[in-house]
Length: 304
Length: 311
Image (cartoon, rainbow over all chains, first blue to last red; front, side, top):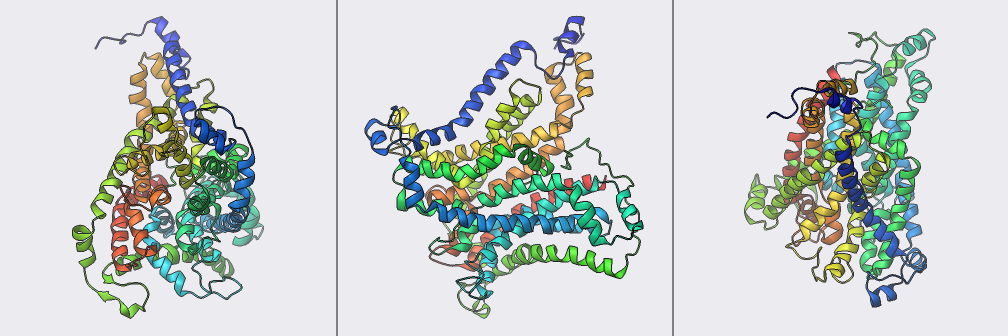
């Protein structure tokens, strides 16, 4: 091939501002990107659009029509589907699960980063691999174990771990630990070791080093992980569906939508309104804390 | 923000390369360290590793899950044999999982990689594009299923209204797998893009400039400079794609619980436990098959990570 082997001066100049694309190619790229981005935004846009339309109107005129604007779908879906109740359920599950995950993960991460024991690598492996195992592969023993373990009435109205929030929070924590341990221990390793030496001279024990020295310093990583974990656990579907079972009264909102579909949603505008409401919390988190979210993903970029 | 991803060319500021031996800690501190490791480890071992082992053991038995443990009849490899020979949904499920994997790999993964490479150049409006592509990543797969139903529904869906067709995209077993895959791709692409974007930040920009000065074409720069940097990320992404395809569950479960053209191995396991017939041994054997496949890739993944750790 004899295309550009010898660089002429002009060519060098043209590419000197590397990073940016050259003009014609840039235009093509921009067009493709714009089209793709619009295509990507469209499904959400469509859901929002239809959620504000009257069912009768769209039934009569089809979805390609224009008009029939209303907010009644939102009122109706909130009332009939009892979304409020399920949002509270999600909150009850997500908040403790995220806090526990971060706390437990930071403990292990601290030991992994602060000391170099021979078992460190194995320990990391135990946590990381657990994070990648398919949850379905563990379903049967977990399900059966949960049925076997009794809980007092005031903790679980089923009298066992199965069907209680305790069990669901625990399994979520167990699954998310690996990722958080990995991210946090790597983050902690970037802290200079001298701070610990200084602390030891001052007579600070291991716990104080962890709690008063390390924890405040890893706040950025904790914030990023908290954002990410909140969306993940809020979105978690499998464990909630199989472990809370029964009538689904305890379902978090993500699993609840599935049960509600048959009962209430023959009306797709209503379904749109429900979907938008359920997406809203994570979308708000995403837009407000976008930086944290991206940081969290790129910190580990391993989550399966 | 520092990025301890297993990506290359990112040196860790680990001041002293780990002292060879830890000084002995005072007893109280030793206890603290032991507890700090022990409590989380018990959670993970108890809720992940013990069940994993139990799955393997149960897979050799026949158990309805209701009676005590001594009601289990041990039948050796019978469950595995039955799965391969007389369980109709198994081979379709395997085929669907493989299709799922190939599709995820060839469409959204390559697309995500392409988007990352383009957006990594300082393009105008790059932030807008990034936001657009990874917005679906924050939505749950179950919700993605519902949103796409607005396109796929036979009577009220947009696709049929636009094209005047009458296809039940989620219901027709000839097409529903593809319909689901498109919906998955919508979410998966942005995720992959983000991973590559993070990795590409590790490309030394001076190298790229040098290549430009030396008169390298765009293509040469990409394959000689950018691509090698992405190699470890490619491995990570490959593992993620395999694991994701193996785990696929939410979408098919919300549509029809993984039946009628949407059989997936993850859904089959669930069907055997929460369905009307609880066949614990049989379901466990399916679970073990899943585990075996994932183990191969988890091993690959751990090897990459550990190689980075040792550096």
